[in-house]
Length: 298
Image: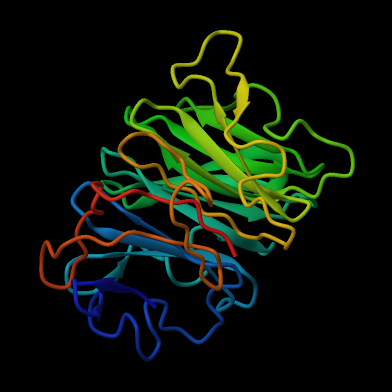
């Protein structure tokens, strides 16, 4: 389901996008994990989700053409979808480059262990290309910096949080684990956002506490970036209660936020987004970057 806010009410993004069968509109279950939504530079929405229609979990994706939600190449939201493998594929993350190229990453157990796979859509050829992005691990999230460099934050099988960068051929880890691989760590549910200077910020849940760190600089030095804590010990939530599912964004002053510094908001799944003004009938506008962004969690 998808809606956009026109300043007064929430409107469907195309007829049937938030009613009936919604965007997926098929016989299977859609969304074992939350779907992933992204806009390109022209405010065209794209969405990816995991779907059981073919009999196992596969990754599906569609884009909105101004009227309808269409497949991105033949079979991106039918049959085996983008993942197209008998193994289970779940937890998609979608990001669109400034050049308009959609990328989707997801967790997949086809090799006998959880790994993250990533693919890009070639609109001219109508095909998806890519492959393995990480070793043992999962729950990746993609983000582009202002220079179209693609980043992936993920959790490995030992509960360490890693940030990697794609150079067009390979994924390279930046620095060490963001959480320092503490013994007995239960880290996960990571989120990434990149400021206007290209500095990545990462938030995650560790032993029930929402935490945040950032790299010391966005233009990486040969020795790799250092990780600096954005919030003192105790995490961004600073609460005795359990904190889950952080969602991170950066305001125009490149300032991440946390409770006590700026207002926060949470929803049932911990996600949050800003709304903008209307740009075209049935299509959401860009976010209002004059408003401060937030770190939210459940």
